[in-house]
Image (cartoon, rainbow, N blue to C red; front, side, top):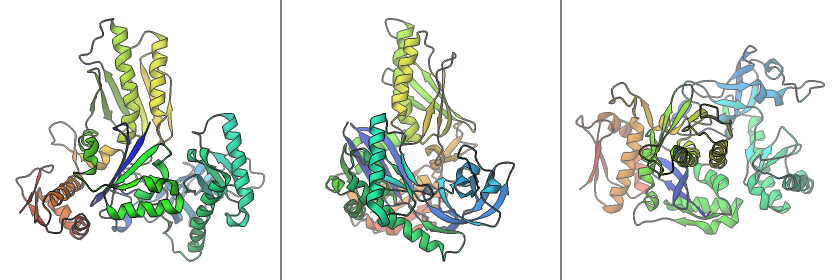
Length: 504
């Protein structure tokens, strides 16, 4: 199906939406305000995943088979023995026997690590010593020679063809590539030629060599490599042959995207369009309302039923309810239809909400094994569209299906809200910074509809204080979007989520 990528490079936050046939399928948020806060980088929505850091081992814990590494954040990063095994130098080391953490690292040692999971809650970043640098078609693995393939590439013949293609790439590349390095071919490589792969591998070598050069003189801790910015990362990871257009609502971001395409994926440059109205980019598919609903527990289904999504510390529970829908042919048919709709929607909601860890789905009871298999097939197809590693277990006799999804970063509801003791029983309320970013977006709209006018923002004191704390960044970012005259007015008459944006 044709796909579109919408990039809202707004003042304060970059939002990326993947839309398929008018339906939102994936969503990524990345905050761009407050990134100069030193150790706090990585909090408040700014992802550290992919960054390569020269760190120092603080503690080695044999009982946990893990080590804690100082990487310059508020909390030390966590390095498990499995992720540190590439550092072990053991005679006769057997691949099937995982080394002990003490055989991989020592306290006080400087090591090169990569962030594979952002800090979540009270937990520090998850690290790996087996660093990688992803490209458009392949992933460079400096510490592990050979060719491997993405697990999403299926079929014995296709896998054998791509393995041979990768070996030919290394043979042709010679000294132009990283000596002794390996590569993981991505799904985008299925239509590539040897020359395409070789060009991608050469670009990866150009990105890796400065990392090794910086390591010789860097102090500890130091970030030696930052992953691509959100716009370039979107092009690299989301844009495929079936992407019909890429809409970007900021001229500078659109030009930067074209420049990246000229370097790495020239065939996509012609699909980039600068969206300049009328209206706002996400209004094309009414995405603002849908994004706002992603923090609500109930999700309606076409038949009149719904699913309810509730998160706890241990797991996320999803309940399927038939609501008012009743099939004329009987209970089993009612249950089948609602379950099929729910199974299709659950995969989409998990992706959009960024839910990770253990997920338990309580489907409506089904009596026929064929119907159970049908529901599991739809659920599996919906989950299979996810780029994040996910596993599904068979349905239990109680109608429960367990799903595990790798946690990479905070789920959406934790990014935009926080615990609340007095919020009419909902248990959470929106963070001041999330409301402030809504204010910024409304200021952009006001500037577009009344250019040159003074924009006055009245908001709760804590929201106005957040905006003033980041005042220089906010004003600079809004000025690029046409809002050059801005005034903040705190008002105790507004609750945290209430505000008013007016022009004069």
